[in-house]
Length: 324
Ligand code: AVJ
Image (tube, rainbow, N blue to C red; front, side, top):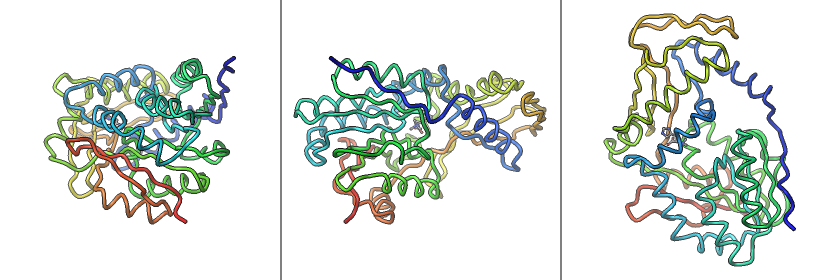
C-alpha cells in the first residue's frame, strides 16, 4: 500500500498575500521600479512558463534534460542518495530522470517536494507517490526560509534545478547557498542547475522569443496584480524587453511603459505614476562561469564534487557536498 502524500503548509494564502503587498509596495514606490519574479507564477503564469520551456529559443530546459538523461546514473552513484528533496519543484518533470535511476538502483526511500504553489505541488506529489510507491512529503513553502524545517534523515540529494538560482542577485544567492549548506547533513549532496554565459544574441533570444510567449509571461505579472491587489494596469500599455547586462552577467526582463500614466492599486491605496518609457525590472536571470560558481560554493563551505555540461556546453549541473 502506498501512503498518500503528506502536505505541510508553511506558507499560507494569507502569508502569500501579505508578502505580495509588501513586495509590490516596496518595488513600485522605489525610484527605480522593480517586482520580484516570484509573482509571475499564478496558474496562467505557470502554464506560460511551461510553454516557454518548449520554445525553440529557450534552450535551458532541453539542455538540462539532456544532462540528466546522460548522467543520472553518475549522479545517483556519486551521491548514493536514498532520498530526493526538490526545491521549487514545479511539475517535477525532469526530476523523474533522477528518480527513475534511484529507484532502479533500489536506493529510493523518500521524496520531498518544496514549492510556493500548493496546486502544482499537490498534483505532482500524488503522481510521484503513485508512480514510485515511496514516502512523499509535499511542503508548501519558501526555499529562502523553510529549509531547516525539511532537513533530516538518510542521504539526501537536494535538487535545485532549472537555473532558478539565477533569479537571485549575488548577495541573496550567497545567503541561499549558506542556507543549503546549513540544512545539509554530512552525507547529503546539492545538485544545482545553472545556465552558462554565452553569446548575448542567443541569451536575448531565449528571453524575447519570436512567438511572444515570454512577452505574455512578463506582462502576466500585471494581470496578477490587477486580480490580487485590485490594480488597474493595462498590460498592453507596457512593452516587453530583454536586455543582457554584461557587467553583472545577467539577463534583465523589463516592462516599459508606452505612455506617461498613473496606475491605481486599490488594495494598497496607492497611485503609481509612470513616465513615458519608464521601466519596471521584473526579473534577473544570472548566467554563470564554471570557475566563478565553484568559488561561490566553496566560500560557503560547499565543495563542488563533479560538474556536467550538455554537449553544446550551454548548461551545467554541479554536484556539491558539505566540505569537511
Ligand atoms: C525559471 C527562473 C529559470 O530565468 O530562465 C523564463 C524564468 N523567465 N523566461 C529563467 C524565465 C523568462 C526562468 N527560471
